[in-house]
Image (tube, rainbow, N blue to C red; front, side, top):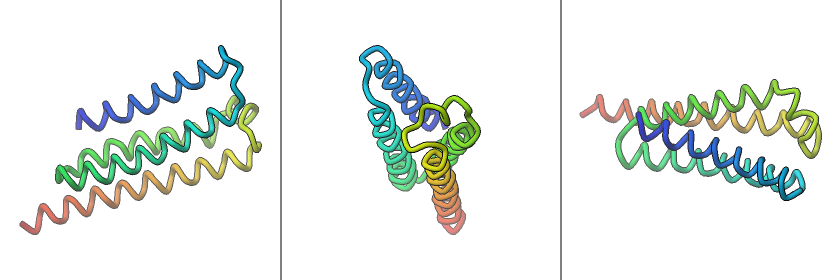
Length: 119
């Protein structure tokens, strides 16, 4: 459980760092978008692989909770709508991917729990 929180916090903090650097160094908005997609891939990969390897459904659930919270923020943030390359439609697609990833991680957790109960 704690490792799941650490993973989620690290990804959120990394995105915040990239966002701050992009302001200071005047990077384009696409740098932040690429960091976002990398974080989504890492959250999904780590959430799935570590949960299955460690047989810990709680890890996947913790990462899923964080991804769903980020998706909720993504879909409702006025600030993101104004600065996101591709506009609101592209931002809503990102939120949909985040929601699906969160739901997928919940399914991974349920699979791990189910295997554990069968033993």
